[in-house]
Image (tube, rainbow, N blue to C red; front, side, top):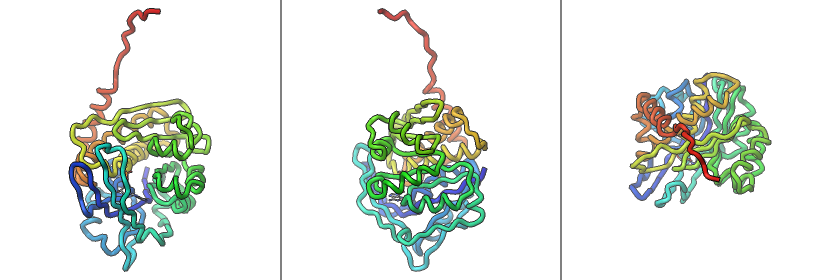
Length: 310
Ligand code: AMP
């Protein structure tokens, strides 16, 4: 099934305890589309400025991502995000967000993007996400967001969530959005709004899936080297939603979603090994397959009960 993603296309300036970059290709839609390009045809929608050049287009095109729906705004500047991480790499600290061309962005999907079977609403202002959702004919729609929009546009985000099939958020964001401290209750509340599937991303601790059939948890792949977590959530989403698109059903089973979690986890683990998109640009399908197999191995155990004392 074909896949369209709408979200930020950005230049990021990032500092972590292990290094920094002043201006690197980033954005939720970019990380997502690189990850999902391993599974199906992907179209990326979003605005960029004059500063977005051939080198940046080439990163997406080398992975076969269709860039026809990237809108170049003459005289504009590309969305810019500056952030840093401390030793707790689970928390991104935003130092600067310049919406630039996103300030006046009014999404208009091309016929091809409208007709995509699967739509991912990557992290952007929730009103824009809803405008996109309303234009799309997709059979499966997933959404991501962030603390900024929960704080500044909560009602709009809740309204947008009502119109999607799947929500992927950090566990802290799910608690913040629902105002419920317990993740299972919070996820149930989100599911009551409409989405059948809720994924709680838990950074270095992995991710949890909640559906009608119950709960599934997967740890993050145990890495010795993490340099930059930027884009981990979007790469996870790209692997997860990409797998769903490749699995190709409208009725996506709990088991398929569990497998999709493993692909998301594997690709996210590569993403964080280096800065920005550096590692995923070189990623191969063999590397993805081997990490998924390793995840299956390290998360399996057979119970051998012993007599328990009363
Ligand atoms: P994550 O996968 O959650 O680490 O997301 C990282 C990406 O989110 C970065 O590449 C940023 O460019 C992008 N980003 C940061 N803030 C925003 C925002 N307010 N709206 C859209 N994208 C953002």
